[in-house]
Image 1 (tube, rainbow, N blue to C red):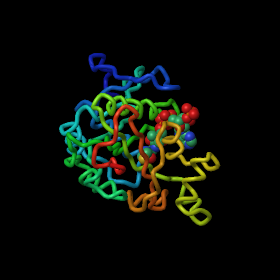
Image 2 (spheres, helix red, strand yellow):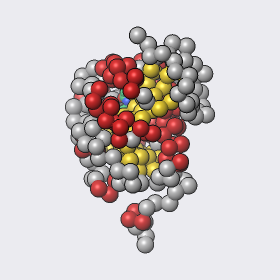
Image 3 (cartoon, protein in one colour):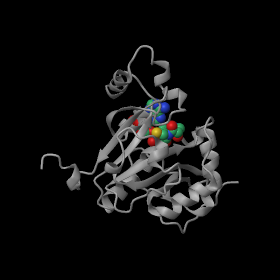
Length: 235
Ligand SMILES: CC(C)(COP(=O)(O)OP(=O)(O)OC[C@H]1O[C@@H](n2cnc3c(N)ncnc32)[C@H](O)[C@@H]1OP(=O)(O)O)[C@@H](O)C(=O)NCCC(=O)NCCS
């Protein structure tokens, strides 16, 4: 059953290039949980999906960072983007998703963190290729600006890498995707959406066989906010 279109939920759809007019972006609400779990099962068939408790916890600790895309004609939930604030100096560059999300709970959300950690973005295959992920990314940048954060960070899956791992090192693969010589179903989307690669990391999602255990650490720096003092290395 589609989630009914709730016209009372504030519309926070950004002006995203190419977004199909049938979609809107709004904050997650408790009635979305079942639909969000179904999307998770479809896009990550080999993973344990989020539990209702985990999604409720995300909503509880940082409600303004949980975004949902809705297909207006049907009311269906089309996709989601889950975020939390972290102070990245508390972590290692190559910490896995499990550590960065406190095992999927977001209990490590730090209201004073300088970085918006974009823990997961997903769009149901029925709604992919309508620039929904781009809008779900742009709306997180609005949050970075309104909360005056330094940057967004994320780990990009590299689901095309397993097919190329005998021919390319992870660095070579990522560089080829950056140059547009190879297309990766996830990293290519992120690059088109304005993320830059920091470096490939191993073990971020250890069971992601499509990515051969590799990911790319990616970031988007808010031009309006200087780095926090502890990152101003020239001082
Ligand atoms: C990655 C994902 C979120 C993209 O969602 P989407 O809504 O289809 O992406 P968009 O329509 O916003 O695409 C943005 C850009 O990337 C391009 N793009 C989308 N999917 C692509 C693909 N498989 N290969 C190459 N380019 C792609 C689009 O053409 C668009 O570029 P354009 O404006 O120049 O045409 C979606 O494929 C997904 O949910 N995948 C499974 C879950 C996952 O792996 N999430 C990432 C976790 S790191």
